[in-house]
Image (cartoon, rainbow, N blue to C red; front, side, top):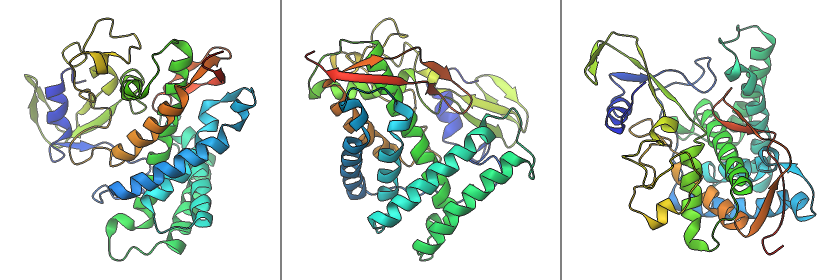
Length: 327
């Protein structure tokens, strides 16, 4: 486990020496040499509008005073806006179909990723996951012309959709849970970036980034053999006093990023280097839209929310309701 930002950057920016450990499916289904597509700035803007519209529809249960799990509520807004960003040519019907298929694959992937060891090729878990993945890839093949671009091949796009959907769902759910737990939070647009960055600091959905050494290497004064596993943890780096301003680094203090000197993202919640998260701009836009909407409301947690580390970090039983902030 690396313990400094300097070591983390050395590991993450040198894939020839520190290779990514696995793909999203834990089955080698994705060519690691194929770069994931990165949405354009204009695609991100349009996708954010889709997210905002879908958020209004998905949160009706909360507007009616009901209780709902944030992980469930955010599924369609994130999935549909992510498909829109990666495939701007897709119409609403195709977009919604691909979003539904991606969510089904994510649901099938969950038990595979959570397994202590990769399930066998013919196990029930793996067959279910394979069927769901092939359904996504089949739909992509039917609707997307790669035009010679390896980043638009169905397996690469499918993996990008899965990663680009699950992570913002978890991050958005954590943002709402933290708002419920730590009210009052100051109002106004100026506090929104702090809400987003503080959520990503305390609850980075991708809390660990594994790499494998391709040969003997010196790192931090230690000699590592070939095939050694090296772990970079944004969760650990987010508690580094040299990177995070203020005191009580375990506390949720959004104002630390607007009232004190500090560099948001210095703990690498999106990674860095050639394998950094290509959906950084989209994810930040989705979270900013969510935080802007959510911070005008008063959030109440219904029961205890557990931290689940079985596949990243996500809130289990994120049951919430909300009222007007003035209530």
